[in-house]
Length: 194
Ligand SMILES: Cc1cc2nc3c(=O)[nH]c(=O)nc-3n(C[C@H](O)[C@H](O)[C@H](O)COP(=O)(O)O)c2cc1C
Image (cartoon, rainbow, N blue to C red):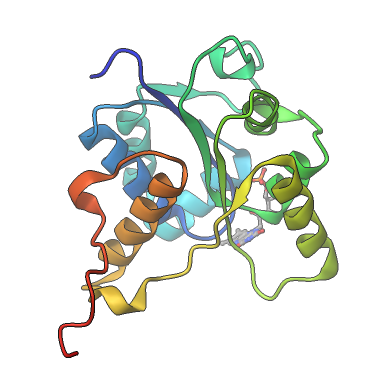
């Protein structure tokens, strides 16, 4: 593992727990340390969407699996060096907590720290349709320096199945956070028919 590379992964209770799993699998393959915090909402969605085994895999993939209320964790301080933070998937509740800097819970605190330290913060915000409050929160975090990255599938990239789709979205989110997902991202090289 590269000793000096850390990434923070907040997993919140939006649908799309498989996106978190693929993000962690890629980060592990890239040998980047993974500081993970799973909200109480995400504990439910992970089990509902993927089953108990997936929660065990997330725990195993995390180099640090941090309790959501542990505000003594390293990632709660700006003096801890991390390359970036992703919230994947990001619920509207967590989005609002970040937008309004509540610092309530480790995920919101770590995101606040990421913003104040001017480090990349990518929010894989998942909800549809969106009301004005959601859109306002998205605008607010964008103005504060975060990147709102809805988990939109790259339909053009020859997606094989749901896992492949999640992997391609996760790889793009990591690239947006300034990390190189290497061979995990299938890049567009032009249309073979033209
Ligand atoms: C199966 C399931 C799917 C959900 N999907 C979403 C979603 O896509 N987006 C969202 O904002 N909330 C969704 N929710 C609701 C959140 O889990 C809920 O608002 C929770 O309080 C979020 O808190 P957290 O951000 O601390 O995880 C879902 C809940 C369940 C049980």
